[in-house]
Structures are given as structure tokens and as C-alpha cells.
Length: 456
Image (cartoon, rainbow, N blue to C red; front, side):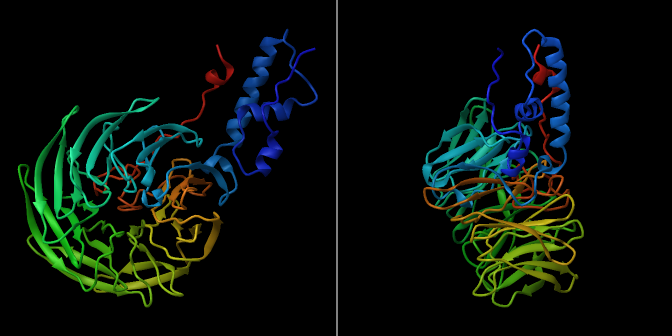
């Protein structure tokens, strides 16, 4: 008698559990009541091929056509990793910092761990990916360049920064890596096996670790205080273009976003979202939008129609705001109530849906037109403090901090990838380059080939 290997629940049960079906589960579900005999290998392969095609059809569409708003998988990481916004490589690999465990994790799109690289310190900053696939991550003391070798992450080089907190690097159009550390902004050149400091710029107080780069190469970095700096990369040196003092303390979690006309948007702890015009040698404030009762301490994101989305936190004023830039003022389009602090940058899907996460452990999908809820997914015991990323298949990736139970969540979404807008998420794009010239094209969605499924 031929034996049948139990390869997991059949298709119906797999769907009911809210997780992706495998090809073998489709095969098992379809072949119950009949066994492919060993002597009918060719017919078996044909049958397997048909079932493979069926599985691919069933799994086509955003996030494999699973129910939006349900959890796809969860991968535990180190405690305190919830401030690390995931970056996604060209092959779909997700990279995220583990926080206190000092690791950078590489995760396959199916939720399995590819590798974990141990760094020199806390990795709660967000990684960035260069054009050649190099992953850059900042710790308390170093900027580290890591090469993904498939089975492991390998050290390319370490650059000493002596930062006061884990930083989130930004990458310029020419490959220069910019990283903040205490009162300094470093510009670093990747030479392959080593790194060279191009220059360092010193500000009056501590440089915050979130950086944005304009289309003209200007580097925008905030000071721990009320000042926003614009720095010019001159090749061998970095010089101050201008500094502007805002009305409130710029949140340490708020990285500037840059609109299609070059307007810089940044949130502050005085309940304001500021719109700044870069005039070259000086800057002027276009307007300040006041959110009554909410500290606008998330990084902003920008939709296809120019609407700015930003999270707010305050007693009975935990919201996601949609704000229209009307040139002389910022006008509220809508405000969406969340269950707790909303300190992470929203992300905009290719269909315009706005995805936001709360410190209360909830992922929200919000309709952009009227601010109504499309769905939400609550994860017990989770504190989402980093901006989510949207995979090519619509999966929402968000890291959270919950002590020893911290990790990376994957949630089924609706959208066919990230929006190709001017600034659709934290640090601009899926590579987290923080640059207006970074690519917002979706990463490749890897699907098993029929030949691979059928074998030789």
C-alpha cells in the first residue's frame, strides 16, 4: 500500500486559520480519498502541475488574496526592537533591527529567519539598503555595512561614530551614507571592504538620528531642540545652508518628509506640523498646522494627491491626521481616532489606502477619501513605534516592542504594494534610503516556478 505523508491541514482548514496555503496542502486537500500510485509517476507529475497552477491562482493578488487585516506570521526578535522600521531588499528579504539583543535580522517573505547578524550595540534604529544590496545599520557606537550572503550576513566594514543613540542612516544618490551621532553629521563613503569619512558637520547641539535628503542633495537633519538644519555636501566638506528655529521641540521620532515641490514637512512637540520652504541660502516657514491636544511626533508620509499623513498623540487625542497643503496654510481633511499613541510614520499603499500603527498594538487600514476605517488588526501586548513597510504583494510589515515578546509582524493587506508617491513612508522608500531620489518602485514578488514544484 502506498503511504501518504501528512503535510499539514487541507486547504479549507489552512484558509480558516488565516495563514497562507502551501502547494502541498492544496495537493493534499485535492487528493484526499485517492492516492497517486507510485507506478503512475508521470500522471502524478501532471496532477501536481495542475495543482501547482491552482495554488498560484488561489494565492494571486495582494498578499496571496488572504483576508486583509489578519495576521500572516510573526517572528520573535530582541527586546526593544519596536523602533526599527523594516527595510525590504530587491528579492523581498525583510531587514529589521532587534534592539537590545544587538542583532540585525534578515527574514524571508514567508516569515522564516534567513539569518541574524550580531552587531556592536543596540539596533533599534532602522536599516537602509544601498544600490548594491549592502545593508547599513547604526548602533550606539558604529555604522556597520553588512553583505547578505544568503545563509549569513557578513561584515564589510565598521565606521566609528560614538553615537548617543542608535541611528537610522540615509543614502544619497551617489551612494554616500549619512549618519547622525551626538552633535555631528557624518558623510561616509563605502569603498567595498572599508569606509572613508568624507566629512563631518557639527551642529550646536545633539544631531537627531533621523535624516532626509532632498532631490538637490540637500541633507535635512534636526537638532535635539527646535532647530532644523540644511547641510550641503560639497564633496570634501559639508557646509550649512541654513538653520531655522521652529516654535516647538522637534520630536526625536519625527524624520522630515519632502514634498514634490521641495517643501519640508516635520512634526514637533508643540502640537504643530511645520511646512518649510528651502530658499537656498535661507528657509521660511510656509505654515504650521496645529492639532489641538496632539503632539505631532511621528514622521509624515505623503499621498499621491499631496495629502500629508501624520500621527498624533495626546490624552483623548490619539489620531492620524490628513492635512492638505494649501500653500499659505495646512488644512485638515480628516482625523482618524486610534486606540493609543500614534508615534510611527504611516505608509501609503499603491491604491491610496493609509496604513498606520499605534502604541496600543493595532494596525489600521484607513480609506484616504473620508478617513473611515477599512479594517484593523490588534496584536495583544504589542507597542508599534516604527513605521510599517508594504511588500510587493501587499503584506504589511511592522516591528513592535513588548519586552521579551518583541518581534516582526506580517499582516495581510489590500494594496498592490507601496504607493509611487513622492514620500509614501518612513525614510521614503522600501530601502529606507531617506532620499527623495530613492526608488519607490515595488520589489520583486518571488513566486515558486512550476519547474521547481514539479522537480526534474
